[in-house]
Image 1 (cartoon, helix red, strand yellow):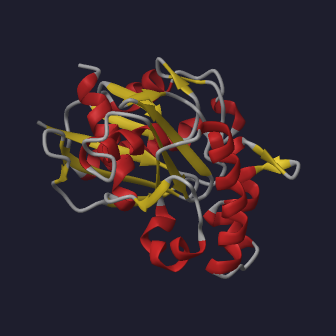
Image 2 (spheres, one colour):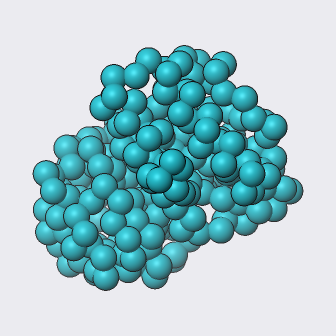
Length: 246
């Protein structure tokens, strides 16, 4: 079954058609800039443009940078605060005229990696997927089961949200080399290990494309690997989520 998956980030809104039975991305990924301010109506309109690009009529899965419970947003990370309390399924569904199923963006990426990527076949222990981009997203799995909406990028380190110090956006903002940035991310990983004692850490998001530049500078007790699906994981996982919602 082919489903449109859309990944909404702080800088870009990306979509593609996914074969949810195999995890194969069937089309070229289509990307539009996230509208300035990332307000609800503007994002819904941009998602509609992605839908129209594929001439798609069917269920839509959306990975979204917020705590999402039954389609309702309860936080707003790198998007406008007016999203809090909004039912994203209903808002975007009304604009597109399609059934929409919204899930936390990092949870979507994690589901894809567990199903078809670096976590495939691992059904015992704790696996943590971290997405490194505009912010830091997280997906936590215990014995193969997702613990949703963990939002570990907002752990406090040195008095700030971790993602303010250690996201890819922070690296660019501070003009850090990959090695300099890795020092900051190492501190974050040490906090993650202290709290969760994971068996496996998967690093995804946009920065995962450059994993060879920073992985040698990271040291963890857990095995640490780059995501296999790279920055397509969010799209694939969103499509899987839409399929599983029926």
